[in-house]
Length: 431
Ligand code: ADP
Image 1 (cartoon, rainbow, N blue to C red):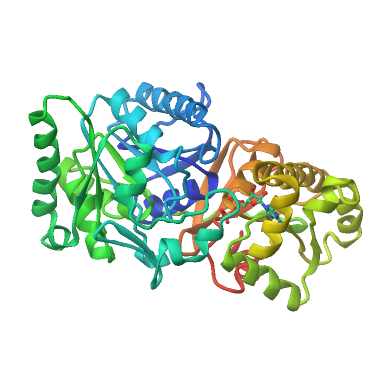
Image 2 (image 1 turned 90 degrees about the vertical axis):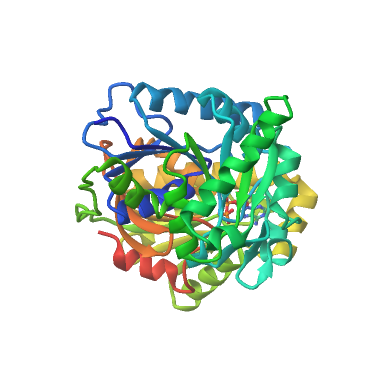
Protein backbone atom coordinates (compact mmCIF):
# COMPACT_ATOMS: atom_id res chain seq x y z
CA UNK A 1 0.00 0.00 0.00
CA UNK A 2 1.34 3.49 -0.75
CA UNK A 3 2.29 5.79 2.08
CA UNK A 4 -0.68 7.24 3.94
CA UNK A 5 1.31 10.22 5.15
CA UNK A 6 4.52 11.83 4.05
CA UNK A 7 5.80 14.56 6.31
CA UNK A 8 8.42 17.21 5.69
CA UNK A 9 9.78 18.71 8.90
CA UNK A 10 11.79 21.93 9.04
CA UNK A 11 14.10 20.66 11.77
CA UNK A 12 15.26 17.36 13.16
CA UNK A 13 13.77 17.56 16.64
CA UNK A 14 10.45 18.60 15.14
CA UNK A 15 10.64 15.55 12.93
CA UNK A 16 11.18 13.22 15.89
CA UNK A 17 8.34 14.96 17.71
CA UNK A 18 5.98 14.26 14.80
CA UNK A 19 7.27 10.72 14.25
CA UNK A 20 6.68 10.10 17.96
CA UNK A 21 3.05 11.25 17.65
CA UNK A 22 2.46 9.11 14.56
CA UNK A 23 4.00 6.00 16.13
CA UNK A 24 1.93 6.49 19.29
CA UNK A 25 -1.22 6.66 17.23
CA UNK A 26 -0.43 3.39 15.47
CA UNK A 27 1.19 4.42 12.18
CA UNK A 28 4.32 2.46 11.25
CA UNK A 29 6.69 5.40 10.83
CA UNK A 30 10.34 5.96 10.03
CA UNK A 31 12.20 9.26 10.22
CA UNK A 32 14.72 9.89 7.48
CA UNK A 33 17.41 12.55 7.56
CA UNK A 34 16.83 14.32 4.28
CA UNK A 35 14.76 12.56 1.63
CA UNK A 36 14.95 8.77 1.80
CA UNK A 37 17.80 7.37 -0.31
CA UNK A 38 16.49 6.25 -3.71
CA UNK A 39 17.13 2.60 -2.91
CA UNK A 40 15.70 2.76 0.59
CA UNK A 41 12.60 0.56 0.73
CA UNK A 42 9.55 2.19 2.24
CA UNK A 43 7.29 -0.86 1.90
CA UNK A 44 5.30 -1.73 4.93
CA UNK A 45 5.43 1.80 6.28
CA UNK A 46 2.35 3.93 6.87
CA UNK A 47 4.28 7.17 7.22
CA UNK A 48 7.68 8.68 6.57
CA UNK A 49 8.90 11.85 8.25
CA UNK A 50 11.62 13.58 6.25
CA UNK A 51 13.76 15.74 8.53
CA UNK A 52 15.20 18.84 6.91
CA UNK A 53 17.24 21.62 8.46
CA UNK A 54 15.33 24.32 6.63
CA UNK A 55 13.98 26.58 9.33
CA UNK A 56 16.60 29.30 9.24
CA UNK A 57 18.30 28.88 5.86
CA UNK A 58 17.48 31.31 3.01
CA UNK A 59 13.84 30.89 1.92
CA UNK A 60 14.64 29.86 -1.66
CA UNK A 61 16.90 27.05 -0.43
CA UNK A 62 14.29 25.96 2.10
CA UNK A 63 11.69 25.82 -0.67
CA UNK A 64 13.99 23.86 -2.98
CA UNK A 65 14.79 21.28 -0.28
CA UNK A 66 11.12 20.93 0.64
CA UNK A 67 10.09 20.40 -2.98
CA UNK A 68 12.83 17.80 -3.45
CA UNK A 69 11.49 15.96 -0.40
CA UNK A 70 7.97 16.21 -1.79
CA UNK A 71 9.05 14.71 -5.13
CA UNK A 72 10.60 11.74 -3.36
CA UNK A 73 7.41 11.20 -1.32
CA UNK A 74 5.25 11.54 -4.42
CA UNK A 75 7.37 8.90 -6.14
CA UNK A 76 6.06 6.56 -3.44
CA UNK A 77 2.48 7.55 -4.12
CA UNK A 78 2.02 9.44 -0.88
CA UNK A 79 -1.64 10.09 -0.09
CA UNK A 80 -1.38 13.10 2.21
CA UNK A 81 1.46 15.52 2.92
CA UNK A 82 2.22 17.17 6.27
CA UNK A 83 4.53 20.17 6.61
CA UNK A 84 5.75 20.14 10.20
CA UNK A 85 7.10 23.22 11.93
CA UNK A 86 7.57 24.23 15.53
CA UNK A 87 4.68 24.56 17.96
CA UNK A 88 5.96 28.07 18.64
CA UNK A 89 5.81 28.87 14.90
CA UNK A 90 9.58 29.57 14.83
CA UNK A 91 10.28 31.69 11.75
CA UNK A 92 11.27 35.15 10.65
CA UNK A 93 9.26 37.61 8.56
CA UNK A 94 11.17 36.34 5.53
CA UNK A 95 9.92 32.82 6.22
CA UNK A 96 10.34 30.02 6.02
CA UNK A 97 6.92 28.68 6.98
CA UNK A 98 4.97 30.79 4.47
CA UNK A 99 7.21 30.26 1.44
CA UNK A 100 7.42 26.49 2.02
CA UNK A 101 3.64 26.18 2.51
CA UNK A 102 3.02 28.23 -0.65
CA UNK A 103 5.40 26.09 -2.69
CA UNK A 104 4.00 22.79 -1.42
CA UNK A 105 0.44 23.94 -2.15
CA UNK A 106 1.42 24.91 -5.68
CA UNK A 107 3.25 21.63 -6.28
CA UNK A 108 0.31 19.65 -4.90
CA UNK A 109 -2.09 21.75 -6.93
CA UNK A 110 -4.28 22.58 -3.97
CA UNK A 111 -5.95 25.86 -3.09
CA UNK A 112 -6.52 25.24 0.61
CA UNK A 113 -4.47 24.17 3.58
CA UNK A 114 -4.56 24.69 7.31
CA UNK A 115 -1.95 25.93 9.77
CA UNK A 116 -2.18 24.71 13.35
CA UNK A 117 0.90 24.70 15.55
CA UNK A 118 -1.06 23.94 18.75
CA UNK A 119 0.40 21.31 21.10
CA UNK A 120 -1.64 21.56 24.31
CA UNK A 121 0.34 18.73 25.93
CA UNK A 122 3.39 21.01 25.80
CA UNK A 123 1.44 24.15 26.73
CA UNK A 124 1.04 25.58 23.21
CA UNK A 125 -2.52 26.60 22.39
CA UNK A 126 -4.04 28.78 19.67
CA UNK A 127 -7.06 30.93 20.44
CA UNK A 128 -8.54 33.53 18.07
CA UNK A 129 -5.45 33.01 15.98
CA UNK A 130 -3.15 33.95 18.85
CA UNK A 131 -0.49 31.52 19.99
CA UNK A 132 0.01 31.02 23.72
CA UNK A 133 2.96 29.34 25.44
CA UNK A 134 1.52 28.14 28.74
CA UNK A 135 -0.30 31.21 30.08
CA UNK A 136 1.60 33.85 28.06
CA UNK A 137 1.18 35.14 24.57
CA UNK A 138 4.00 33.87 22.34
CA UNK A 139 5.37 37.40 22.12
CA UNK A 140 5.61 37.60 25.92
CA UNK A 141 7.12 34.14 26.33
CA UNK A 142 10.81 33.30 26.35
CA UNK A 143 10.49 32.80 22.57
CA UNK A 144 10.88 36.55 22.20
CA UNK A 145 14.56 36.01 23.04
CA UNK A 146 15.23 33.04 20.73
CA UNK A 147 18.77 33.34 19.30
CA UNK A 148 17.71 32.72 15.67
CA UNK A 149 13.95 33.19 15.40
CA UNK A 150 12.76 35.68 18.02
CA UNK A 151 8.95 35.64 18.05
CA UNK A 152 7.55 39.07 18.85
CA UNK A 153 4.02 38.80 17.40
CA UNK A 154 1.51 36.25 18.72
CA UNK A 155 -1.13 36.92 16.04
CA UNK A 156 -0.51 34.05 13.63
CA UNK A 157 -2.84 35.40 10.95
CA UNK A 158 -0.63 38.47 10.87
CA UNK A 159 2.65 36.51 11.14
CA UNK A 160 1.79 34.08 8.36
CA UNK A 161 0.29 36.89 6.30
CA UNK A 162 3.71 38.56 6.22
CA UNK A 163 5.38 35.37 4.98
CA UNK A 164 2.89 33.85 2.55
CA UNK A 165 1.37 34.91 -0.76
CA UNK A 166 -1.81 33.01 0.18
CA UNK A 167 -4.80 34.64 1.77
CA UNK A 168 -4.60 33.79 5.49
CA UNK A 169 -7.89 33.09 7.25
CA UNK A 170 -8.98 31.88 10.67
CA UNK A 171 -11.16 29.03 11.86
CA UNK A 172 -12.00 30.34 15.34
CA UNK A 173 -12.43 28.18 18.39
CA UNK A 174 -16.23 28.38 18.34
CA UNK A 175 -16.25 26.45 15.08
CA UNK A 176 -13.52 24.04 16.15
CA UNK A 177 -15.42 23.20 19.35
CA UNK A 178 -18.52 22.41 17.27
CA UNK A 179 -16.70 19.40 15.85
CA UNK A 180 -15.34 17.94 12.64
CA UNK A 181 -18.34 18.75 10.43
CA UNK A 182 -18.28 22.41 11.43
CA UNK A 183 -14.53 22.57 10.87
CA UNK A 184 -14.89 20.96 7.43
CA UNK A 185 -17.56 23.54 6.57
CA UNK A 186 -15.22 26.32 7.68
CA UNK A 187 -12.45 24.86 5.48
CA UNK A 188 -14.79 25.16 2.51
CA UNK A 189 -15.63 28.77 3.26
CA UNK A 190 -12.37 30.57 2.51
CA UNK A 191 -11.80 28.38 -0.54
CA UNK A 192 -15.17 29.49 -1.89
CA UNK A 193 -14.27 33.12 -1.21
CA UNK A 194 -11.02 32.66 -3.05
CA UNK A 195 -12.72 31.33 -6.17
CA UNK A 196 -15.14 34.25 -6.04
CA UNK A 197 -12.42 36.84 -6.19
CA UNK A 198 -11.26 35.40 -9.49
CA UNK A 199 -7.64 35.61 -8.48
CA UNK A 200 -7.13 31.91 -8.02
CA UNK A 201 -5.32 32.69 -4.81
CA UNK A 202 -4.51 30.06 -2.31
CA UNK A 203 -5.91 30.16 1.23
CA UNK A 204 -4.31 28.96 4.43
CA UNK A 205 -6.50 28.92 7.54
CA UNK A 206 -5.01 29.29 10.98
CA UNK A 207 -7.08 26.86 13.07
CA UNK A 208 -7.63 27.45 16.78
CA UNK A 209 -7.03 24.54 19.17
CA UNK A 210 -6.80 24.61 22.94
CA UNK A 211 -7.21 20.93 23.78
CA UNK A 212 -6.39 17.50 22.44
CA UNK A 213 -10.11 17.06 21.71
CA UNK A 214 -9.91 20.07 19.37
CA UNK A 215 -6.92 18.52 17.62
CA UNK A 216 -8.70 15.20 17.18
CA UNK A 217 -11.66 17.00 15.56
CA UNK A 218 -9.32 18.96 13.28
CA UNK A 219 -7.58 15.69 12.33
CA UNK A 220 -10.94 14.19 11.40
CA UNK A 221 -11.84 17.23 9.33
CA UNK A 222 -8.47 17.26 7.58
CA UNK A 223 -8.46 13.67 6.35
CA UNK A 224 -9.01 14.70 2.73
CA UNK A 225 -6.68 17.68 2.52
CA UNK A 226 -3.69 17.18 0.27
CA UNK A 227 -1.56 19.27 2.61
CA UNK A 228 -1.72 19.86 6.35
CA UNK A 229 0.71 22.25 8.00
CA UNK A 230 1.34 22.52 11.70
CA UNK A 231 2.89 21.15 14.83
CA UNK A 232 2.83 17.52 15.84
CA UNK A 233 -0.40 17.97 17.81
CA UNK A 234 -2.64 18.25 14.78
CA UNK A 235 -1.36 14.85 13.60
CA UNK A 236 -2.88 13.17 16.67
CA UNK A 237 -6.22 12.54 15.00
CA UNK A 238 -4.95 11.41 11.62
CA UNK A 239 -4.55 7.71 12.39
CA UNK A 240 -8.16 7.46 13.59
CA UNK A 241 -9.27 9.32 10.50
CA UNK A 242 -7.40 6.91 8.22
CA UNK A 243 -8.89 3.96 10.08
CA UNK A 244 -12.40 5.34 9.71
CA UNK A 245 -12.25 6.91 6.25
CA UNK A 246 -9.98 4.46 4.48
CA UNK A 247 -10.85 1.33 6.44
CA UNK A 248 -7.13 0.62 6.83
CA UNK A 249 -5.67 -1.54 9.55
CA UNK A 250 -2.64 0.10 11.04
CA UNK A 251 -0.02 -2.15 12.47
CA UNK A 252 2.56 0.30 13.79
CA UNK A 253 3.43 1.09 17.39
CA UNK A 254 6.72 1.78 19.07
CA UNK A 255 8.57 -1.49 19.33
CA UNK A 256 11.45 -2.16 21.66
CA UNK A 257 14.65 -0.56 20.43
CA UNK A 258 17.87 -2.58 20.27
CA UNK A 259 20.15 -2.01 23.26
CA UNK A 260 23.04 0.33 22.53
CA UNK A 261 25.98 0.18 24.94
CA UNK A 262 28.85 2.62 25.26
CA UNK A 263 29.90 5.95 26.76
CA UNK A 264 27.32 8.73 27.01
CA UNK A 265 27.41 12.41 26.12
CA UNK A 266 24.95 15.29 26.26
CA UNK A 267 25.43 18.16 23.77
CA UNK A 268 23.34 21.21 24.53
CA UNK A 269 23.13 24.11 22.09
CA UNK A 270 19.62 25.28 22.90
CA UNK A 271 19.36 28.55 24.83
CA UNK A 272 15.70 28.08 25.73
CA UNK A 273 14.50 28.71 29.27
CA UNK A 274 13.81 24.99 29.73
CA UNK A 275 17.27 23.95 28.53
CA UNK A 276 19.00 26.54 30.72
CA UNK A 277 17.26 24.94 33.68
CA UNK A 278 18.08 21.39 32.51
CA UNK A 279 21.79 22.19 32.14
CA UNK A 280 21.89 23.86 35.55
CA UNK A 281 20.15 20.88 37.16
CA UNK A 282 22.44 18.31 35.54
CA UNK A 283 25.54 20.27 36.53
CA UNK A 284 24.27 20.72 40.10
CA UNK A 285 23.54 16.99 40.27
CA UNK A 286 27.20 16.27 39.52
CA UNK A 287 27.22 15.53 35.77
CA UNK A 288 30.68 16.33 34.36
CA UNK A 289 29.99 19.63 32.59
CA UNK A 290 31.95 21.89 30.28
CA UNK A 291 30.56 25.23 29.16
CA UNK A 292 31.28 26.37 25.63
CA UNK A 293 31.92 30.09 25.30
CA UNK A 294 31.35 31.32 21.72
CA UNK A 295 33.80 34.18 22.24
CA UNK A 296 36.47 31.70 23.30
CA UNK A 297 35.66 29.59 20.25
CA UNK A 298 35.99 32.66 18.05
CA UNK A 299 39.46 33.54 19.30
CA UNK A 300 40.70 29.96 19.51
CA UNK A 301 40.89 29.61 23.31
CA UNK A 302 38.33 26.82 22.98
CA UNK A 303 37.81 24.35 20.14
CA UNK A 304 36.39 20.88 19.54
CA UNK A 305 39.92 19.61 20.25
CA UNK A 306 40.20 21.28 23.66
CA UNK A 307 36.75 19.98 24.58
CA UNK A 308 37.71 16.48 23.48
CA UNK A 309 40.87 16.67 25.62
CA UNK A 310 38.60 17.44 28.57
CA UNK A 311 36.02 14.77 27.71
CA UNK A 312 38.21 11.83 26.75
CA UNK A 313 39.45 10.86 30.24
CA UNK A 314 35.91 11.14 31.56
CA UNK A 315 34.18 8.97 28.95
CA UNK A 316 32.62 5.84 30.31
CA UNK A 317 32.72 7.09 33.91
CA UNK A 318 29.30 8.70 33.48
CA UNK A 319 27.81 11.09 30.95
CA UNK A 320 29.73 14.20 29.90
CA UNK A 321 27.73 17.36 29.25
CA UNK A 322 29.00 20.05 26.87
CA UNK A 323 26.77 23.11 26.84
CA UNK A 324 26.76 26.37 24.90
CA UNK A 325 23.41 27.00 26.56
CA UNK A 326 23.30 30.48 28.04
CA UNK A 327 20.70 32.98 29.29
CA UNK A 328 19.36 35.71 26.96
CA UNK A 329 21.73 38.47 28.19
CA UNK A 330 24.78 36.31 27.52
CA UNK A 331 23.48 35.28 24.09
CA UNK A 332 22.84 38.93 23.27
CA UNK A 333 26.38 39.89 24.30
CA UNK A 334 27.83 37.16 22.07
CA UNK A 335 25.61 38.16 19.14
CA UNK A 336 26.61 41.82 19.54
CA UNK A 337 30.24 40.78 19.15
CA UNK A 338 29.99 38.02 16.53
CA UNK A 339 26.68 38.59 14.76
CA UNK A 340 23.62 36.40 15.23
CA UNK A 341 24.10 33.96 12.39
CA UNK A 342 27.87 33.76 12.75
CA UNK A 343 27.55 32.97 16.47
CA UNK A 344 25.00 30.23 15.77
CA UNK A 345 27.09 28.77 12.95
CA UNK A 346 30.26 28.76 15.06
CA UNK A 347 28.59 26.93 17.93
CA UNK A 348 26.87 24.48 15.59
CA UNK A 349 30.05 23.64 13.69
CA UNK A 350 31.86 23.09 17.00
CA UNK A 351 29.16 20.65 18.11
CA UNK A 352 29.38 18.93 14.73
CA UNK A 353 33.17 18.44 15.03
CA UNK A 354 32.82 17.42 18.64
CA UNK A 355 30.10 14.85 17.92
CA UNK A 356 32.28 13.22 15.25
CA UNK A 357 35.26 13.17 17.59
CA UNK A 358 33.25 11.80 20.52
CA UNK A 359 31.82 8.95 18.45
CA UNK A 360 35.31 8.20 17.11
CA UNK A 361 36.38 8.05 20.79
CA UNK A 362 33.68 5.48 21.53
CA UNK A 363 30.56 7.43 22.50
CA UNK A 364 27.44 5.54 21.44
CA UNK A 365 24.67 7.20 23.48
CA UNK A 366 23.97 10.87 22.78
CA UNK A 367 21.40 13.36 23.99
CA UNK A 368 21.25 16.57 21.95
CA UNK A 369 19.34 19.67 23.05
CA UNK A 370 18.25 22.14 20.40
CA UNK A 371 16.70 21.77 16.96
CA UNK A 372 19.45 23.42 14.93
CA UNK A 373 22.04 21.82 17.17
CA UNK A 374 20.52 18.37 16.58
CA UNK A 375 20.62 19.04 12.84
CA UNK A 376 24.31 19.90 12.98
CA UNK A 377 25.14 16.83 15.09
CA UNK A 378 23.08 14.31 13.15
CA UNK A 379 24.48 15.57 9.84
CA UNK A 380 28.02 15.36 11.16
CA UNK A 381 27.41 11.76 12.20
CA UNK A 382 25.99 10.94 8.75
CA UNK A 383 22.93 9.34 10.31
CA UNK A 384 20.43 8.66 7.49
CA UNK A 385 17.36 7.40 9.36
CA UNK A 386 16.00 6.86 12.86
CA UNK A 387 13.84 4.16 14.42
CA UNK A 388 11.42 5.76 16.85
CA UNK A 389 11.09 4.23 20.32
CA UNK A 390 9.23 5.04 23.51
CA UNK A 391 8.42 8.60 24.53
CA UNK A 392 10.70 10.16 27.17
CA UNK A 393 8.82 13.46 27.57
CA UNK A 394 5.96 14.95 25.52
CA UNK A 395 7.31 15.31 21.98
CA UNK A 396 10.63 13.59 22.63
CA UNK A 397 11.09 9.89 21.85
CA UNK A 398 14.14 7.72 22.33
CA UNK A 399 15.55 6.77 18.92
CA UNK A 400 18.21 4.50 17.45
CA UNK A 401 20.03 5.18 14.18
CA UNK A 402 19.03 2.89 11.31
CA UNK A 403 21.29 1.31 8.79
CA UNK A 404 24.51 3.15 9.66
CA UNK A 405 27.66 2.11 11.44
CA UNK A 406 28.12 2.41 14.38
CA UNK A 407 24.57 2.14 15.69
CA UNK A 408 23.86 5.09 17.99
CA UNK A 409 21.19 5.72 20.60
CA UNK A 410 20.09 9.30 20.00
CA UNK A 411 17.68 11.54 21.85
CA UNK A 412 17.00 14.80 20.03
CA UNK A 413 15.24 17.38 22.15
CA UNK A 414 13.64 20.54 20.91
CA UNK A 415 14.67 23.52 23.04
CA UNK A 416 11.65 24.02 25.22
CA UNK A 417 10.73 20.38 25.74
CA UNK A 418 11.35 18.17 28.73
CA UNK A 419 11.22 18.54 32.49
CA UNK A 420 14.01 19.94 34.68
CA UNK A 421 15.83 16.58 34.94
CA UNK A 422 15.44 15.76 31.27
CA UNK A 423 19.06 14.76 30.63
CA UNK A 424 19.11 12.17 33.40
CA UNK A 425 15.59 11.02 32.45
CA UNK A 426 16.60 10.58 28.83
CA UNK A 427 19.75 8.60 29.59
CA UNK A 428 17.74 6.35 31.89
CA UNK A 429 15.06 5.77 29.25
CA UNK A 430 17.35 5.22 26.27
CA UNK A 431 17.83 1.61 25.16
P1 ADP B 1 16.17 25.51 20.15
O1 ADP B 1 15.67 24.11 19.94
O2 ADP B 1 16.09 25.96 21.57
O3 ADP B 1 15.56 26.46 19.17
P2 ADP B 1 18.53 25.51 18.49
O4 ADP B 1 19.68 24.56 18.59
O5 ADP B 1 17.56 25.29 17.38
O6 ADP B 1 17.77 25.47 19.89
O7 ADP B 1 19.02 27.00 18.36
C1 ADP B 1 19.92 27.58 19.24
C2 ADP B 1 20.91 28.38 18.42
O8 ADP B 1 21.66 29.21 19.31
C3 ADP B 1 21.92 27.51 17.69
O9 ADP B 1 22.21 28.05 16.42
C4 ADP B 1 23.14 27.60 18.60
O10 ADP B 1 24.35 27.37 17.89
C5 ADP B 1 23.04 29.03 19.08
N1 ADP B 1 23.75 29.23 20.36
C6 ADP B 1 23.94 28.32 21.32
N2 ADP B 1 24.60 28.85 22.36
C7 ADP B 1 24.80 30.13 22.06
C8 ADP B 1 25.44 31.20 22.77
N3 ADP B 1 25.96 31.01 23.98
N4 ADP B 1 25.48 32.40 22.18
C9 ADP B 1 24.92 32.58 20.94
N5 ADP B 1 24.32 31.60 20.22
C10 ADP B 1 24.27 30.39 20.79
